[in-house]
Length: 205
Image (cartoon, rainbow, N blue to C red; front, top):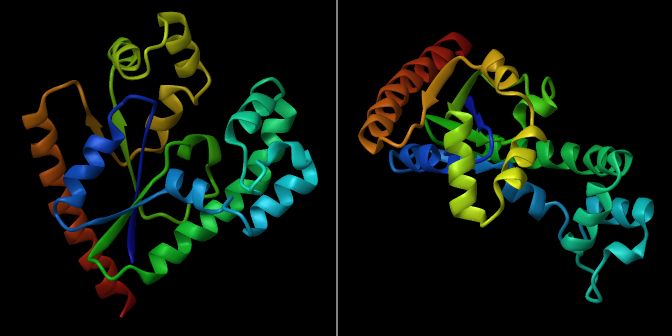
């Protein structure tokens, strides 16, 4: 399976780009979906979280209290690292299972924190970065999340630097608000990925 990792900073427009590929029949396996799935009640990751952080991060029904967990790790960088050390391996395993079961020409992994977790995802064949100017991303956050400008800036600052993401990129789509441009870029890259996937299959026969 030829695998393309799709990433980008907050409010860059990853979802818009993912939809363009999905409309062309490409399966996009989302790390955010995986992160929720691997902490469902009964999942090994949730058992580990309870062991490390205690039962006060669980709801009465045994599910993860996401708000309590967010508050815990937001105030404590060491706690955040401990949580990530538990969750991220399970997320990667979830994504690998989706890759193994995928029967498309190629597939995509939507990984918002790709730069932060590299090289754990170095097994992918290609990296596509969705990029947008910081000020535009801040404006989108103001509209989308109803936050202050300072909060939006802090959200951007909490992620990997734009340069770190671009350093991993084989391909870049600049999502500056022009839908026609976005459609054309996605169409061209889809054609390229089909060719590269065919080439990989030919080389591995």
